[in-house]
Image 1 (cartoon, rainbow over the protein chains, first blue to last red):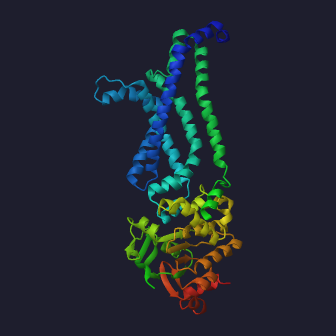
Image 2: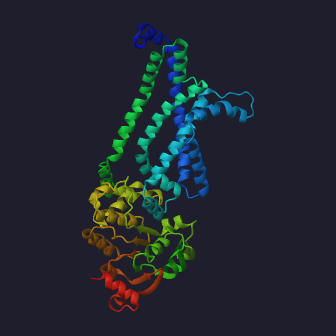
Image 3: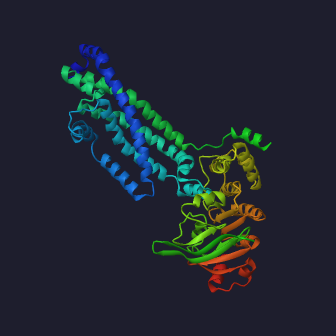
Length: 244
Length: 243
């Protein structure tokens, strides 16, 4: 076993397949993750806002979405989109492009988690804030935009960065449906050559390169969220100008 | 003086609990009305109905001839009223100055420069102009409440609602807030104040109402209240809070 790990021949073989296997896989994972994150954020904001609304039906819809996608495995969801969705859509033999499939998979799944992050973030802002806004005559959207959301943002940024990190890792579920992502290329080269240690170590390194900055970002945002600003010096000049 | 706020047959229930029972009350323009009463008597609910933070179960609140409704509550709030809360409710992500200029700029569409100039005047009135560029969390409770009063002032509303403005303050900060309110009372602003500060009521109020279990059971001038209240419940309450 250990002999195989330090076998130079195997490492040379790995280096040879980097351009044709690992780079396309890495790029596919990156693209899927970015598009998936965008979709997850859009869904998360929509359903997160719905879950804090006064309308019972909107809250119920949001609840069903969150509970359904949080309580079933991502791998199952991805396989469902790959094999069952085309049949439900008429069975024309149409296969979704892998990129779209991946985006949907992680996007919808993490959208449910992000929706919860946003809901808790909004609920963490004291009720008095929206009452003060309402007493001044701000509408719901104005209150959200200028008073609630800026405060929510500070609270939700660290868990959002964590969600982004998990989303990158979870793109690996695409390998199950030949998603052309990093995990898929890793698996296929590993099994075809039998150089498992090399294949997975290198793959892990590539995932790490994508995820570690996000982990650092989450930590940075966490520290930043705790720090309270003291004053805004830039206002001084403006005040002098306005008063004079 | 013209009627400014007219409350007719106002009731408010929270589930089975009747917080307000068939209240009739008129506040004249420029009047300083103080609402007193034991905890749970409906004081806060009553004042919160005046800007529709609470939706009446039945009855109406009319402001300058317009009946408050879910539909026009924001329009009317924008036009007529401001509120000062027990918990201050300053916007913590904004500086003191930004707290004051947000509504004038976004709702009354005042230019930023004019809004800043007006805000500084209001801050001067509450004695806090040097704190303009600070964030609320840097201020003491009393200072935060004075900022909240300045925020209510700088949209130039005719009606300011004070919902127990000194109840959340440390004792040594109560007076600085009351002083600001006493100063304010010299203007022609209509003030409705829920408070336990009897000294303030005596000094400032044109009229005091005593609320008990959702009903106004006594009403009169401060002199009447503090020299010969008629209702036994009022006497009992006053004897407990005046030392």
